[in-house]
Image 1: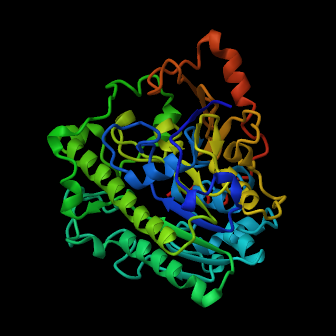
Image 2: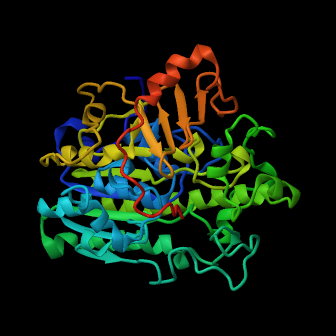
Length: 467
């Protein structure tokens, strides 16, 4: 295992990480947060003090990847503990179809249901499942789409910047106050739940899932958050003008999202910097909301017996590969933050590849619950506790039936449904500018990584509809 020690975190009353076992579980799901968090170091101007505090107190997985680069199949995989290739869920599955789709291939329970079966009280708010909150996952849920002020807005009567109605994509200052933001309401629900749980249910263990929408589009935040990132001071991503020239046609077709802005449009209309500003501001606002919930965890006495996990469902391109979108098999779409904090969790950065598929078995283990034999992922506890290591296992992401990316500690291999390929050497090409798949000296690497692509994948149950 490759890891680097972080600054020691602080446990209540000087308690060491090894002195207790987590009883409760606080789960933060952040929508479309790419690897622009301080602990991962991929943008120097992010403002994430609350995520940074978690990183200094726990284990950061710096090479973590979503099993799908889009919300629905990523969350379906995370909560079921099954790969998309096992379920046939490659696109945006509605919440009301999720349980039946999983039941058709496995008797497993979704993670919140599993915890309920083990005596947990499960509460949640915000965007937890793809469309908010699947009723059967919760004992108590608040804040799904259409409630309060709406999950993604609602936006102003007219768009500010981008007028294609096929996407929520837009950016600018809206609304006037933090209190009117859906994520603020999600965070305050979490604090309220923590304040009353002991009174209402005594020492019954709980899972609290809080799903924050920002930085999902539209990138609307109150003006004060935009002001934290002056336009003329923003450091822009380094991009290559002809970056797509060595990408197979299948790759360009798969990643084409005509409803989203292109880099060419953003540059011609002087909107790249405002987009960057709005995305960075949205990250900062999501971090602020995470901080509200974490303060509630400490205030109400649960910090010393709770496992906390923070994760994003997929990444996002901010001009790289000439696009502003997720929905691709390149690194910016699949690499995500994944942080665990809690009793027994060591302070370190782990660079071995892991996936969101590993969250379910890891949570069960850290809560000292029986393993679910249906889980396809691995229990990452040896990393968290420092008791050992696991063999390096490349991570597999999929977008659309037959299109796969395989990532190890050094390389990203992509194979599309038509057999065309990409290969990137992150040691020498971290921005994935040079496709070396056809070079003979890399044939062994390409063949080795291709062996991790499943040859028995379930057909697409959504009829090819990705979004």
